[in-house]
Image 1 (tube, rainbow, N blue to C red):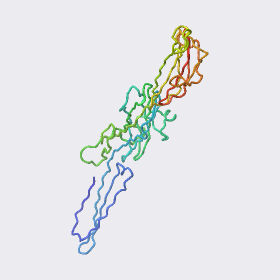
Image 2: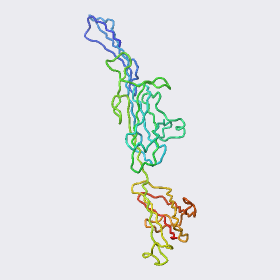
Image 3: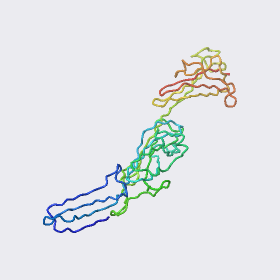
Image 4: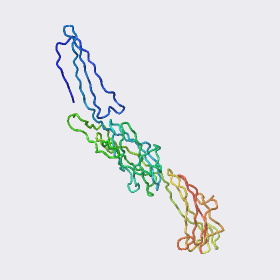
Length: 349
């Protein structure tokens, strides 16, 4: 800091003082800027004007370090066994100097075994989706030379396990930590607060608030996004009933003796509040002690009591494990709270 002082002689009853300063930028005056403030004093002695006296003071603007991370849209709905699911974040340099920002993620909630491959990509076109060009560019660990007031969108991308279930949530935090900028392509050192009295150089003041997983005034900020699992909750139930036998005739008196006709009823139910199950394919290998009744056929999309179905499905005499006969069929989508069935009949050998 420079300071110049000059003693004044006898001063008249009035003095004119003029001062000037540098206008502030949007993020605050840029770190390293020299601010000079000048003063001019005009005076008279015995009614006669005297030479004006002046003084000036100069100081260097210090660096205010401030980073903000914001989750763009959360929660994001996901399904079990989905890959490359995106949480979008905006990272803003609110400081008054260009900075490198180191990025990291942390799972703060949810079963770690059911989420994996968490990566960060730069959203180059700002559409909040992971595009092929961004995948080709590859995952990142930092943002280089982020200017004051600049906002950079990044994508946290994760794979959801097939073992995740409806209602699961995964909370993922993104942290951006400020590092010294100034050299393109080279990561600067972590910015630390300058301790002690103000110096004549550029001091560092950590101005950031507390994020979800970092403290205030630590030169970093973190925000959290959530994946919410919306999965189908399917239960399958297989029952049988004796339709008729050669001795007692039709139910209710029919017995499961050789030559009797038995109906298999397979129901698939989806719990209320779950996601719709699609491509629901059933596979049933018949026991060796029964024979498929082709005269009755296979019915799909029946009710929970195995009625009102429509003809469909397939029978393969040797398509099952060990050459056993196999029944297959595909049900229509099973929405939350719905039950659909497949049923067919066999004869006991």
